[in-house]
Length: 426
Image (cartoon, rainbow, N blue to C red; front, side):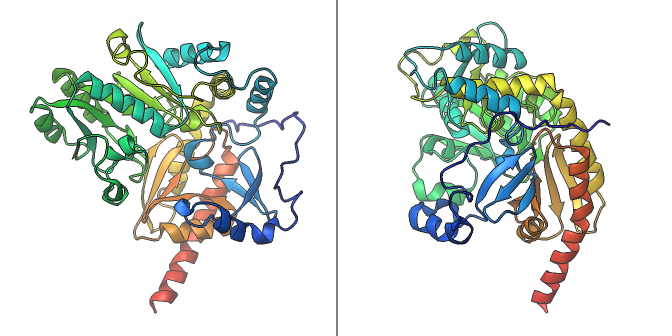
């Protein structure tokens, strides 16, 4: 197995206003400044990051970390990747924004490339926006326009975003309740239960079904190919649109361009974001076939910044680098290495779920938060998808040696958390 090497960028490093180099007090006062000046919807930040190269980040105090989260499945090429930096820098020197009264070469090229890797039929189309929740808002409007007044079905434990329409599709009651009523009538059904889905579809009033092929926020739960094929069959039979939310699991993260492709099926609508821009805010809604592409007509949807030249340049750089550097192969190989190395490494690890570089490490108790803290102290950035599940979603360029460093460290981290937990209980 060959490790992926990442050359250092040749683009001159720029001083950034507010970096620790220009602000010697940053290491001490960033927390107070944050709480004083930023809305507290994210709680208190864990640290202040100032620099990144490859899969490694540096904080304001000068500490280095191996990033196994990639901005929550965003930074597919890691940090300061030369192809990404060069593409965005070059585009910034020509056009950054022109409004959607016009188009640009990059927007045309990106739409063509996305439709190609999605294996979309003639008459398919792309709409560009700025985030995953916006992509899902566009998809929801397509669904509602398809069958006016129709219900929408989403899966239990689904997460589709925070804006009102996308929030209506998100299962967690604590997220939805403070803002009800929301923008759509949504019925939630259990995942992997085709009979429950068929029971709702048979009522004849369902406009569409939203599905994540891998439920990321639920704890990295891959849905079976058989179930996804049955969802496709049932939605087609009942004239309901099938929307695959590939915001977290798409753009190569599972080792294929899109997670649903493993089931050999095609949705009516697909939503993308996160890894699409490789760190630049970028989302997309893809419609499959001329009938679906014609549902929204001029004036029924729009965006100011979506598909701007900078975003398209970033996304094209991500796609071309994944192709030229064979990163889908690396995602598959390193993902399997992590699965093999973590499975059975400690009694507290019950299983490792997922595909490619979107993995959930299921623990035997609600200690994921403590493991995240211990890992950070040891120089690793990971995430607790829920109280008992560690989520790994590293850059696609992660090497064997980097993966092995976490595999080797994890048993000790679990031992340390176990010891601390036992002391507190006693």
